[in-house]
Image (cartoon, rainbow, N blue to C red; front, side, top):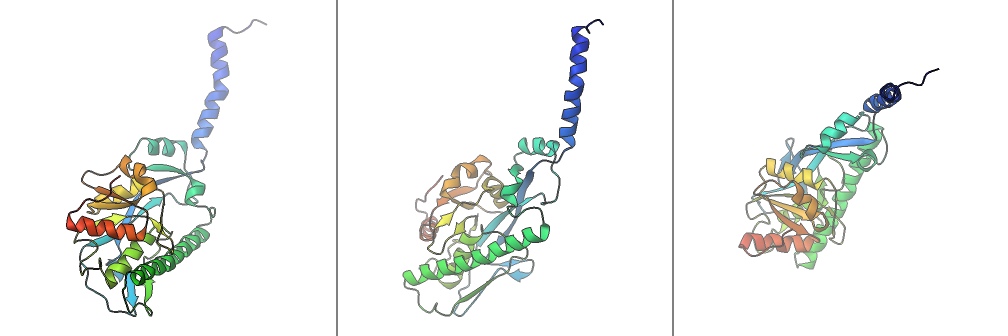
Length: 265
């Protein structure tokens, strides 16, 4: 039997490869595609309800906004295919992330929601303890009976921790000199908080800066270790301030209000 010519041989051998690529294009991949989500002013309302309800101590009237930021991602049961991944790689308002990093508890929607809301409850507790600890260490009296309730609907996760602490402090004491922490600005940002006031990294920062710029923020507070990510797609006119601790964040906001030098990425 005569051997096929080289062009024919290449054509024949290419058939399985073409079938493989076609199958890969149709197969779901273990990724999620994320984009900028909503923001919420912790000093104001979210979906008609106060985000922070602080009781047990006198509160001050605040101005300006402290906007926590979010990302939204394809659902845990949604198939992401190679076209979605390629599209996400080439768009600045999308990010392709391993599904396990977005949904560590698996694909069950109810379990994911339960986990995320649990993280938010823990974050609220840590944020409250961190805020009250800061206030007591700075001589603010009358915080012994303070209770805090947080209502962010179905927003979950721990990344609002820093802003919940800042909101509590602003409502109870401001910047310590009778002025608002915001200086009347719209300030956005992200970061977890520990009970001793350490700010932690969160992920998705490049998308969160876009959400902040879209919603009118002029300043973005970012965990210091994520400065490079925040710079990547930073909207024009958005000032980045790296932070590592709750007390350092308040010092930076106080300096910003006074027009003094503040840290930068």
